[in-house]
Structure formats: structure tokens, C-alpha cells
Length: 344
Ligand code: RIB
Ligand code: CA
Image (cartoon, rainbow, N blue to C red; front, top):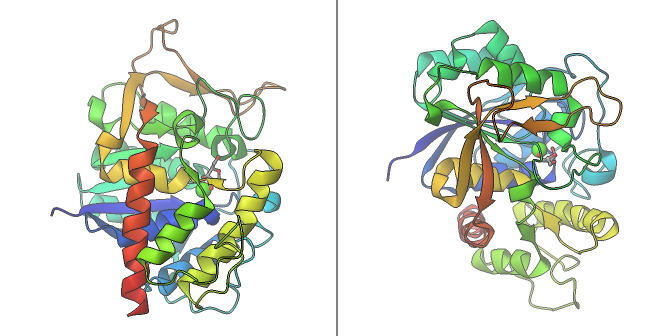
């Protein structure tokens, strides 16, 4: 099976954690590098969380690079209420080994990796686009040097999770998103335009306790004593990946129970990684997208010109549908098998 070279830009983050596990668990992926952006939590915590999760998954060899400390043109806003004050919910990450953590700058590392392997790297962004904006300003040829680009961000036909019509990753750094979307403008082959996967698609993927139970069972870590409707979220689990992931998810499930009305979680980031590995999981449409950066009520809104009012060439491929059920099944099988490998 041909492995796709992946580079993830993350703001780990609980669903980012699942995205990292999905990437290293997938036989059709070769995770060659990770860059960290400030978003869910501060960039130093993002880098620590990312390196610790990769080490727990047996992949402490993957380099983790610290990126920009904050947005291009506005103060950093984090979301401890969603991902916990340290970005991984109730999981005890502090003090865990972080062998992959490097001192090399993320933007330099990304530009160097892409230039050294033109046409080979599939870039997947799972946080604010601050690092990617800095990279394309430094290396204007970046869009043509990638094999593909997938962006978790935006909302187009649905409602926002940060403001009425805005999605978190774009909302944190709209100026960076605008730089990226303008850089990936006309003249590129359609398949090189960023696949922008927004909440319209990612919120179809709801991880529920039963899915966590199936994943643990696939990995040989399912607790035998059933403790009620939230099983296995409050069950005794083996240390390492099972304990860490479920402690992180329990916090995330409680957030969604309070704000979204269900005990479970939207798992945006791993859905986009799955789509980068198998484009058949989503349906995309080429369209011109821009970002509002200055309006009082809609700053951070992704605006898609579906009917060509602006007369500008398409600069994105916006996801309009996704196979959430297929993705959830793959998540259970792949990450569950990783749990089994790590435990053996
Ligand atoms: O809006 C969802 C996105 O914001 C996800 O990437 C999540 O991790 C947060 O960063
Ligand atoms: Ca994220």
C-alpha cells in the first residue's frame, strides 16, 4: 500500500490528539513532521501535548516543531473551556516523555521539508493558519510544492461554533486564513487547491461512548465492569494511551453535553486527516473563498462565492458532504489496532 507523506499542523487539543493517533495508526500514512500552532491552548502546551501523545503511541521519533506564539494581527484567544486548561482535558500529560520535541522553528521545518520533497507532502492543518501564512509568505512557491492540502476550518452553510457564522480555527487568526486563501489563488491545478473541510461536514462525525468502548475493545483494553450509560468514560483503564485518551475525551464529552446537548464529541480533526488519506470520504466543490477580517459581528467568517459575484478564480475546494459513518468505523479499527500494538 502506498503511504502518503503527511505533515500535520496542530493545536493539540483533544480532537487533535485523535488526529495524531489516527495518522500514526494508518498504514496508508507516513507522518513525517508536525508543526504546532497556538490555538486551543498556548503553543508551548500544544507542543508538549503533541510530543507526549506521539511518544505514548510509540512514535517519539516523529519531529514536533514549535510554531508561532499567536495570531498575525490580534491577541491570542485560547479555549480552556473546550479542551481543558492544558489542552488535554483530564489527561495527566505533564511530565510524560516528549522525545520528538525539537528546538527547530516550525515554519522553517515545514518549508525545508516541502522543498526537499516537492510534490510529495500532503499538508493537513488542524488549528489556526498562523504557521501556514508565515510559511507561504516566506516561500511563495509553497502551494505548488505540496501534493495536497486539507484545512479543518470554516463553516459555509451551517452555524458557527465560535460566533453565529464563524468556526474556531479561522476565528482565532482570520488574517492568517486570508493570507493563505489569497496565496492559494488562481493558476493552480484544481487538485492543489486546499480542501477546506468546515463544520458543515465535520459536525456529522459524533464520537459517542459506545464508539470509545468499541475502540478500547478492539485494542484489548475494554473495561469489563459496565458502570452505566456513560461507560467506558468513567471506568478503570490501563495506564498509557487508554487512560490518557479516555481522560481527555471525558472532559470533551462533558463540554459537548453542556454546549451541544449530547454526551459525546464532534471530532473535527481526525475526520480531516481521514479525508486527506482517502479523498473519497468527502465531496468537495471548487469555489472562491475569502475571510472577513474587520467586521464587528462576522470577523473570522469564511465567505464562499458560490455564484461567482466576485469574478475571481476558485482558490479552494469546499467540502459539502462527508461519510461520517465510514470515518468513525475506520477510527475505531485503526486507533483500536494501534492500542493493541502499543500494549503488546
Ligand atoms: O472548530 C474546530 C476546530 O477548533 C478543531 O480543530 C478543534 O481542535 C479546534 O482547534
Ligand atoms: Ca485543532
